[in-house]
Structures are given as C-alpha cells and as structure tokens.
Length: 305
Ligand code: G3P
Ligand code: CA
Image 1: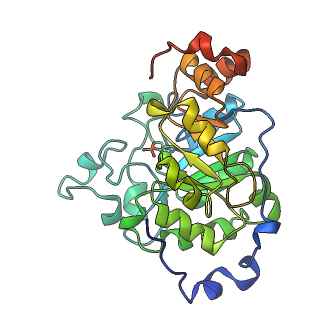
Image 2 (image 1 turned 90 degrees about the vertical axis):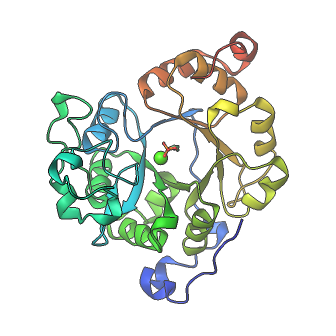
C-alpha cells in the first residue's frame, strides 16, 4: 500500500478554509439503527443503476443512504457510472458504433448525455440519462438523502479525488452538517482513500476490501470503515475490525456488500456489521428490522447471495 504525498497546490485548489480540519473536529456519523441500509447504485434492483431514477426509487422506498460511483469524462466532467465503459448500461454501441471500446474516458459529457441509460434495464426507463455528479448531488440533496460516494477506478483518472472534493464543496456537501451526517467516501484503492483523508481529514472514509487482520491498524489511520464483500465475511473478521478505532477515534465500522436477500442480511446483522449495501434495500431493511443480533445461530446455514 502506498499513499501518495499531498500535492503542494491542494490548499489553493480546495480553499485553505476547507482544509486543516483536525481529526478532533471530525464528523461523527452515528448510526442509531444498525445495520444502516445503503441503496447500492441507488435502488438498482428496481431502477437503472446510478441514475436519478434509482435515487428517486430509493427515496420512494424510504431509504436514506444511497451509494454511487464517480468517474471522469474526456472533457473533464464528473459522471456517475459504474463500469469504465458505456456498453452495459447505455445504448452507446448503437449511437456511436465506431467508437469501440466505448470507454467513459473517451467520451465527452455532451456525448454521454445523448445515450439512453434506462432502456437496457426496462422500457419503462427509456430516456434516462447518465447523471453528472452535480445533478446527482442535487437530487440526493432534494430528497435529504445521504451519500456513500465511491471514487471508481482512480488509477484511470489522476486527480479524481481532488476534483470530486471540489465538486462536493461547490454543491454544498462539505459544510459541517453534510460532513458530520451525510457523506462517506470510499474506494477500492487505498491510495485514493488515503488521498481523500489527507485532503479533507474531517470526511468519513471507507476502504472497499478485506485487508489482512494484521494490516487493519494501518488502514485505521486513514479510514473509518472497512467495507468487504459479504461472501467471505465472518463474525471473527467483523470483531477484529471492531477492536480498532478508525481515523476519527471511533470504533472502526464494517459496511458489507452486495447483499440482496433477507436471510443473508439477517445473518450479517447477527455478525454485527454496521451497514449493508444492497440492490434491494426494502428487503434488507425489512429483514434486518425483524431479526435480532442474537439470531446468529438461527441463520448460520443461510447461503451467500
Ligand atoms: O459499495 C460497494 C460496492 O459498490 C463495491 O462494488 O463493483 O458495485 O462498485 P461495485
Ligand atoms: Ca460502487
């Protein structure tokens, strides 16, 4: 794991007043109703992933937390999309047949806006568009929802962390209220999460993955969450994470993904996870509301989804 040094220009770019948040001033997002249910790419079992419709659907279901993926277009815009190419979730092959391999980074935002990002999912969503991060933040804000933002494939987009933070700040997401209660930034890249933590030490962060227990202490210096796939998660691993304090001095948390069935969600609740990231947030919410944390043995045989 290598954490890049902080660029000298960062203070100027982000604004000095928004930097230098000592860890003691750091936000403390409490989760009174554990596990927190996070709509993965929005309520993506019911609406096309990472679209405004998926955010709306999560809101319709009464889900407060949504997860998304942020990448950068050819002309430097921030777009909300999961895959690093446009094939699976848009009609790009029809609209731009000569532009293989249809990488997000090879298209301008104006070109991407011409694509239908809903028909692949259902004709009911024909005409849905790939949102910019700005549009996405505004919609999430309109719903008073909270955001688990993933910096996606940062190795492809140098400076994505700083640019994302600047956009969050421009849209009002880095004020005290948002940072304290409404925002977590995560990535599969430890370097990327480390960079976010260096740029804005007050923001809650998560590492996507399952580091060796022996390495957790190192991660805990710059993250508040360890967010592993549920498939290999064990109660012992959750306990090992919980033994440590994260970057803001609170118990290191576990948000696990992607859990789409009720019995599995109830089992993971019994492990003590702090959050469950799911395409079916209504199902997970109902299943975890019903179960108690002492149900571990009852669900021990549930299969992984
Ligand atoms: O939030 C967890 C999850 O999004 C990580 O995997 O591939 O869906 O971005 P992926
Ligand atoms: Ca994601």
